[in-house]
Image 1 (cartoon, chains in turn purple, yellow):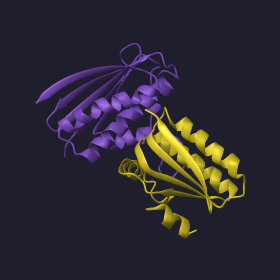
Image 2 (cartoon, chains in turn brown, orange):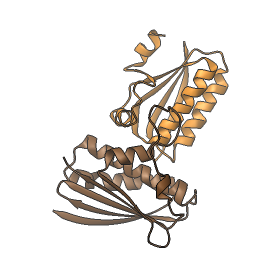
Image 3 (spheres, helix red, strand yellow):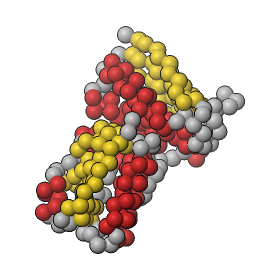
Length: 135
Length: 115
């Protein structure tokens, strides 16, 4: 079993549910359970929210392109934007004992996915690759 | 996707109910609903209960909204109590290790009687 799905959505938060509802059955197809699938969806949603907030700086007229590769027991999601490039050295999850709003998205991505890789060598924008293998 | 927000006056304060998805798109609406409750209640109420049994999805912006509500409650001497967390909310609380940060009750009746 192997599949490749490409999804382009506007960089508006109102379309985040489209990403969630498209990805959920694909994650189940890859063999993950419902609880794990929910966490994977959450982490992808956080990555998209970060693109809207930081790469596109709230500009809702841009595009986020997701390329999803589904295999048995493995899902890889590549998120591509054409916004402000991420300074990879500044990306770090916040300490969870600091109870304050914000900063959890990076923690969720790092906790849920086996691989979290930022590629800024494209000239413009960032490609974020998220990979999860079923244990 | 929208979130439906309702609130009602109860003996100890206010009971807010959330239904739907609480994400980056709808968290501002939840903030607005909370702000209305704080305006309506002033400093004259003991507790704010938020029923989360119908929350289908919550992301970190929803958590940030709850943390802001908790901070406002602490400043005003109001108890914030979360009621009947749906499984998706429980999952995100687990990931963020927030279960010990909030007062969480399985039902409104238990939350209201243990004040």
